[in-house]
Length: 506
Image (cartoon, rainbow, N blue to C red):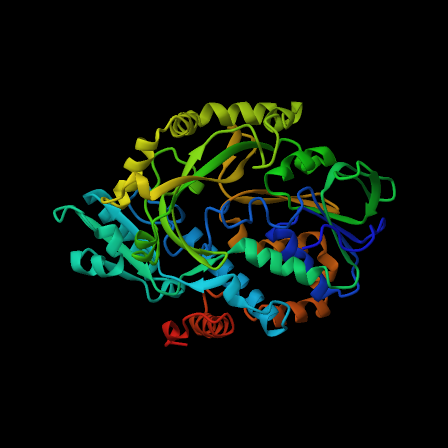
């Protein structure tokens, strides 16, 4: 992808900051809804999807809530809350529909370059965890979004599902697993770059790499004055626009604070870094073909849910375990160690201090993770793979996440695990903060942003009709309509070249 695409338009209708999956999704949605819209995109690095969207940096590749146990918490009365899992599963189906629409329009030409079928599994050990997983399975059976899920405590069945995980394991150990065959592996780095390759070919769209946004302020005419600096030449330019979207991953919070909007006051960020163990033994890699998620340690952030993950990256099969969490003051993998300090304002100091005091267990957990030795990391891996050997694995640096800290009247400040769109009252600017589940639900997040920031157009017959063309379930609930859910899954599976056989009920 070329560093720059076309001249810099100083008066576009839309500015997108950050060349990740969120900006790519919003850019294509807007061009489909309003083909003549002029969009300028600015990215501080020299390539798209180099931070949170990149495959090596992304802790979750195809979140559908099939296997992620942190989306189904156990309530005080012992029951399972599956509301978040259902919401995420439905949101991921929306993403699949939009991608399928783009494939049918030949905007995206090779779905196999970014999505492939792979089973999603949850795996636990110990009597208490087995009871939890059994309850979770029973709860999810009540929702057709999870039709086809299998549950087993049988040793031979588990060995068939995940031979590498069961190799060398104590047969007296109490175990259980669930399996969803309709799971997928999504390479969001590849998908994002495919989307930007299409965007740069469209009239009225210019993508500028090696450009950093230095300042943004709204003037009396309600236009956003955005100062951008060419990091190659040092040249500073002023660009004015009616609407700005800040989709810069960990870099979104500092830019939101720079905007000065009232809605952004009180927001802070808590950075969490990550590392993987990457398998370098081809024989071991070939023995595993699934995404197997376990339970997170007490105090661990959601992005640190341990999983043994088969992925396809650059057409090569990889096997990762982790991620191991860590702490750094950087907000981006390619950021500055001063990012956290620079993000502190008088308006967010109290929320950040309050959230810090109430999350001391998390701080302790991150410190423990940072201090881990190679032997400690291997021990965690051997919970999943009893026969794992240190010489078969190497450490790989993962991505950077910034968890949202926000004001709270009762608590002073709370740490939120998830994503949040913060927008100005007039809808002229919006920023996406947070992390998981992020990329997998990009389409539903961006559609809610369209409603919030382009409300009149969003409600128009033209936009509503077009949105229904792009996303057949738009305006309906897949969670309430089993027939629609099965139909949509069958269509997207066929278009995306996934396992259509798994949708026999469609």
